[in-house]
Image (cartoon, rainbow, N blue to C red; front, side, top):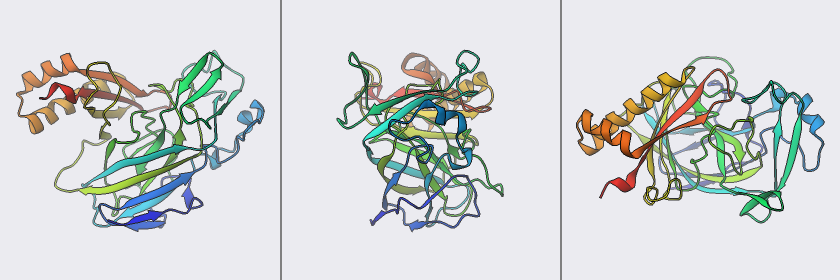
Length: 312
C-alpha cells in the first residue's frame, strides 16, 4: 500500500473522460486530498448574500482528481473507503434563487456563515448547534459518453449524490465505465440533512483521505451505487453495527424506491442466503427508505438502509 498527497490545485469542474488523470494508484492505495468550498472561493467568510445571485457556475464543484486506479476496467466496481474527513475553519449555507425544493417560496438570496473551528458543532444561534458530520457531497467516476458533463445533477457514475452517511468509516461502491475509473471528489459538507432541501448543506473547504480498492467479477445495476456505513447513531437500537445500503437514481421516486428494495432483496439472497420472500419481509421490518437527494433536477436518489445489527 502506498500513500499520496494530491496537490489541492489539481481540480476540475466537469465530468469528462478525456481529462488526463492527476494521479495513478494501485488497488489498496490511499490518497489525501483537500478541496475548496463548492463555489471555489466565490463565497468567502463574511461576504454578503449578493454573491449568490451572481455566481459563476463554471467555477462550481472544484473536484479533486481525476484519479486513475490501475487495473479498473468497464464493468468492474470501485470501492472507496473513507478514512478521514476534516473540516477547515469556516462554512456557509445559502438560498440560491431558482434552486432547492421551495424556489417559489424563497426568491431572494440568503446566506449564513458558520464558524467550524471547534470541530464539534456549527452554531446557527446560541441555543441552536448543528452537529458536524463531514462528508463529500460529490464522489463519482467518469462516464463513458464523450464530452463535458455537469456535476449537478447526479447520474449513473454517482457524482453529486449528497449522501450524508458517506463519512469516516463508510465504504462506497461505484460502477466503472472507463479504464481506471477516473474518480473525483469534492463539494464537501460539514453537515446536511437527508434531502438537502434548500440545495446547500454547510458548504466548506475540507481535507479528506480515501483508500481505493478494485472489486472485479461483480457489477452494479446501471444508475446505482451502494455503500456500507460506519457503525454509529443512525437509528437507536439498530445502528450499532452500521448499515448496508442500496441506492437507485432516476427521475421517478417510486421507481427508485422499488429498485432500491429490489437490489436489497438481491443482496440478501446473495450474501445471506434468504429466500426472496424472507428478504422482502426483512426489508419491511428492518430497512429504512430514505431520500438522499431531491434537489438536483432531474434525477433524485432513494436509498434503502438495512441495519446490520439484525445479523448475529
